[in-house]
Image 1 (cartoon, helix red, strand yellow):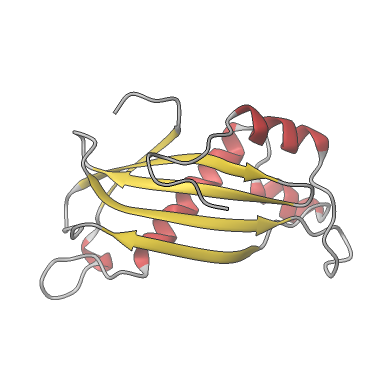
Image 2 (cartoon, helix red, strand yellow):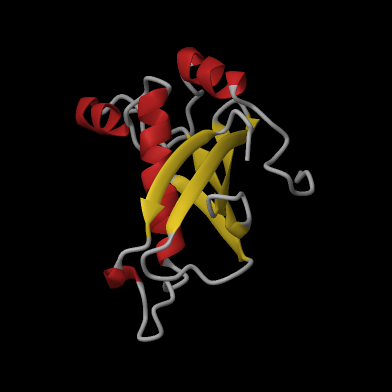
Length: 147
């Protein structure tokens, strides 16, 4: 698949699978989160630094996934991630999990809210972060646009 989405690649490890060698459904979100961490590092907002400094928190407030076919032990998976919406204090990320030919395994969507140092109230996204997210903005990754 040729697009400008951020890419993260992993192989399905044995410990993520059941007795049939198929990845347990909830592990998809762990791999989505690994892609998210790499993406935030790539746009110069590494989560470890934000957590360590205590200046910005981006908790996940919603997650959903659609599964198109099983992910099996040993398969190489491309995770293509793009922001789908950037708001004042939140952003939506869309993930597409594919094989090397671009055939889909699954898709996921997460919503993150910016929380300031107090840890209780929504806070505006830092302008640099908003700009970096907006620069990669897309309606979605080949699916119907969402509200």
